[in-house]
Image (cartoon, rainbow, N blue to C red):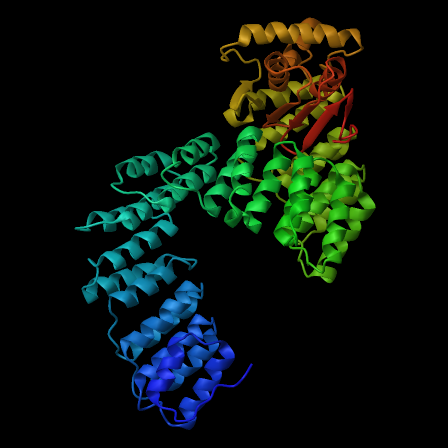
Length: 617
């Protein structure tokens, strides 16, 4: 680059150069000339412009050095303080903005409305609301509290900490409000997961913008209310077009609902808007397709990305893993390493999960033991839990137990449950009872799930007295969240079934269809596995108990509601039982259908009487 010509230089000439937003190398040349020609003391506006240029180039350190040199004498005007605090606030250096505010107060400088706006915004990024409360009090003393911009910053700050009452109090003291005031209040309720109140405020808004809609949609997704999230997503059309954040939230809702049709529609919308084809959108599309059972479509999205980043790779690896495609997940992982991309903790968790579901003990062990030395990723409890699960599933119970006992954290309920599940798979009662003694020491609100595993372990070994004892405890702990539920999407509508469902409007026809299905698969050798059903029932009642499991009802509805040959996709909130796994294999063969089931842990793709998990789950 050619150096700038400084012949006949003057302060006015330099001001004109700075107003053109020069590159960083040119800024440094101008800075040098200002010093050489002793223009610093003569022209405050030059320092102001120079700091502006450094900040515009995101050269915070250079701007701060210049500011610190200038503020030693004479004291800088409030404009420069605000300029620096605004830059720190915008670039997420919140602690520096707050430190600069403290320094300003120490020098007896008087903050104005802009100062409070910038520093309150910075407080929203801190770990505690205490700093924000202190600044709030100072704003009151300073007499700037009723300024709309300061008040909006306060509402936004309290919303970030889900302090609904504080946010509401500030909002109600305003004589005038704008769309930012209302949106921040909606955000406060959404952060607090009170979507009913958030919806009430949203409906009262005199004016909405795209951020208002984004807050509502992301609030529903965060609260697990995915159907409402998609309803709001569609309602925002045609008044507003969704931005990247809204699309990512909507795709997350589709992924959690297994709503493939709506996910495809969003994919088409992204394809028709090149400006929306960001890394985040591609990552969300990969995740959506993987969780809707279309790992082939996820792969196609991934392969079209010119230069996949770590987030794209991580989503693809995790998708392959939950489909039980451990070897493919390792292949993508190695491809990522060949691209000189370092995995993060979520990437490692994804590939370990793939090894666990595919029985790849050697590969998983190599990755687990080298993750810190090779890639600087310190193992978290989730990584230890995944490795324990890998060893336990493969039958290395003693080694898995040793890892759980020696890891640098107190094992949580997830780790012990993984071991207990392994004990059930390998019918090891003595180990199972040892694990229970550790689980009982944990204060877990989800102990009912543990009891299900223990009950099934006792039942598989014919220990019926123990089964009775455990199930008496389970009866007292009954939790609606522990009831088996399955979802299936037909014609863009998601239908829900519960175990022994009687509420679906077509339940009579569905049960008749299920009876026909069970008769047909019985001819080819399927027999109900009622091993885990209470021993005090007769054989017919025990078979009936497993016949009405939610995924059986869902697949019956799918067969009667879809065209011949169409794939059937089902989501379930619990782990698929052995009997349902066996009958779905038989159904896929007899009816020549591909049946894809996503349970709590992974995907099962049933085709021509076989499952993608190879009966290893």
